[in-house]
Image 1 (cartoon, rainbow, N blue to C red):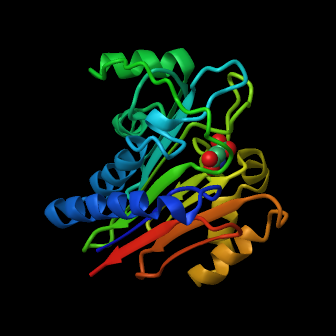
Image 2 (spheres, protein in one colour):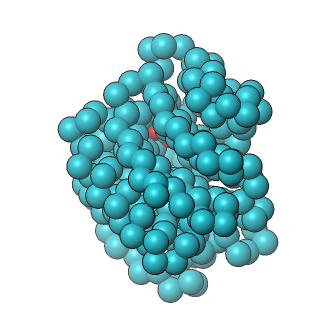
Length: 252
Ligand code: ASP
């Protein structure tokens, strides 16, 4: 059993305590349930509920002052889902998790809102934070005692981006990827990550996780903040960034 959480490539060690708390909550759930999906989402919710992070309640504002969030969940048994441009729900990662068992893999805007309401989620005014900036997406990857992997990610996007803009976080292979061998997440400037199909290409680069992620980070210019975390089914676990991204690993 293992879990790794990050608080965003653009964040600083000042919020390390929030990332630690998220990892501890995820770890607690992993120990109790041995379910990596519940663990990764539980950890992500802790950061969505912490106003210092650019996700859920603390999401940054779009160009027009609106808050639109993105979230993604994927599992090593072949399921993946994401929601994008969602307004007025405080824990977008839970809505993405709910979508995991549907035929549709991705919902945007009004469709995501409708889906959330149908599933019983309550609308909550999310004011967001004027402080949010690029690179504070949050996320977690967990592996169970039997080698099942799950990833969960959530973001307010990038401050000042236009309404309707889609970053990397909800995009399969760019901001998130998971299969029987790996669970991997990215954080940073979404446009740059998307152009590089960063998560999938880093995974393909090497079986050595450290090499793979360091190579992935170098796909982007040094001055473009980016970070990655991942777990491989053989037990390798690693996190890295070209910034001071706070992250935390807990394992037994
Ligand atoms: N990757 C996110 C996006 O571009 C930003 C972030 O990491 O905070 O939407």
